[in-house]
Amino acid sequence: MPAFPPRQLAKALAGLHPELFIVGPEDLEGRHPGEHPDNFKGGVMAQPATAAAAAALVAWCGEHGVAIVPQGGLTGLVGGNVSRPGEVILSSARLNRIIAIHADEMTVEVEAGVTLAALQQAIAAHGLMTGIDLGSRGSATIGGMVSTNAGGILAFRNGVMRHRVLGLEAVLPSGAVLSDLTRVVKVSAGPDLKHLPIGGEGAFGFVTKVVLKLDIQRPAKATAFIGVADAAAALAVIGHFRSLAGITLEAAEMMWPRYIRDHAALKGFDLSWLEDGAAALLIEVSAETVEAATAALEQGLESLWEPTGLQGGLIAQSLDQARKFWDLREDSGFYYANLPGAPSFDIAVPPTFLDAYVAGLSARLHAVGPGYDAYVYGHIADGNLHLTVIRPGPVREEELRAIEAAIYTGIAQAGGSFSAEHGVGLEKRHAYLTFGNPVKQALARTLKQAIDPNGIFNPAKVPF
Ligand SMILES: Cc1cc2nc3c(=O)[nH]c(=O)nc-3n(C[C@H](O)[C@H](O)[C@H](O)COP(=O)(O)OP(=O)(O)OC[C@H]3O[C@@H](n4cnc5c(N)ncnc54)[C@H](O)[C@@H]3O)c2cc1C
Image (cartoon, rainbow, N blue to C red; front, side):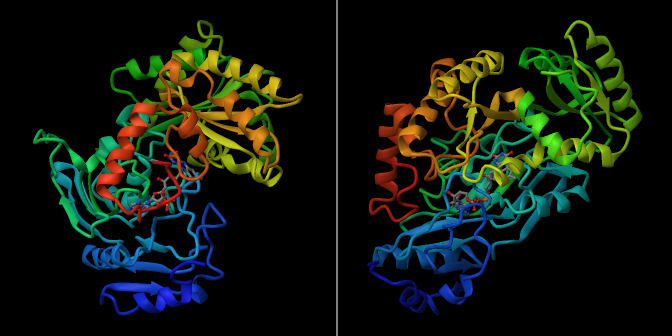
């Protein structure tokens, strides 16, 4: 029995601060819980409209020993938002203001609950872009992206969220507000502690505001869908377009054969131009004009055709066609209709190790059981693969451990990571303990104990 059952907790929190809105169990019922069905199990949601209101809630929870689960857009894929009765959901839903766009210095100050799409739209009017982009842009919030250290499509060129954050404000577990809203790239003034909540998955406090570095928008783009034999061929294509003067490589996403065949069949997308057994590489470049970008793609692919053994290709003739290419990559959850709960993973290896990894993975999965295979796709230019085992879940614990061993074996030794951009949450706890670095884990535990000695922030997720 939780110390405060949800109804009682909602009552206790009501009136705590004039800028704190409390949503009780009745009002949460029926709301879409996002990517995990148990996100709203806590039953009580606090929505502060200011950092001061969030601080009042955190201080109260500290005094009463009530755990807090921070939530943003609920698009997280590892169960980092799951809440239990007796815990308070601390939502950034009302922290939704874009405070200031400093167009001349290419920075923006934004509250944590602003969605990526809303920010993208607001800064586009200034010819600027975020320099980071995710398929979940419509719902993912800046605070959630900070807390998961999100990566996405542009990370190979612009880095991940950690590299985009200049300043940050967060309510710490003590209830104190850490306000470090610097707007400069260079800060060499002792340890840069704003990096603790970045990728901290809500365990080090509640992010309320962020200053982000922005980039110039390059809207004149051309998109191609190309057949490649393997990652080595794809990397040769990527290398070519990265080295062209006047051209920017905007995106490079790869879909291995089984993924692209099954997804195209489902969408009715004609793949007759793609040779059997080929993988698909989606590539986007920008230039001064759309014509220049298209010409660069045409000439580049022609010159690469023989040396890299390309296995078919299409250049989008319209924005609509480009969108259809992107849908094949971004609607990546297509398999869940037939494979509900299929085990899925998000790993990174150095890009030149991708072919060896994928070949080894097939062999290791076949050893787990006959017919075992995975859908493989991802952000190839930075070596980040998403993998879904072609098997409906939930799988038995023993089988899951064998699958995890097949997926994670060799990654750390190759210089990669068992979790690339989705985090640890609930679902990668075993991987964190088994495939993570024990010295790093001990250091993380020390920091967590120092900052949150009573463990009130997002307990039972990252196993400190
Ligand atoms: C279709 C789809 C495509 C995706 N593509 C990508 C991709 O390309 N790259 C990528 O990196 N991810 C991707 N994701 C995963 C997800 O969108 C990211 O993890 C995103 O950063 C989560 O943001 P959110 O606002 O939804 O956070 P939530 O899901 O609400 O929360 C995620 C975690 O952050 C914590 N948190 C949230 N807000 C705060 C806050 N204000 N303060 C402290 N902690 C907080 C939560 O406790 C939780 O642990 C994708 C997801 C989907 C559904």
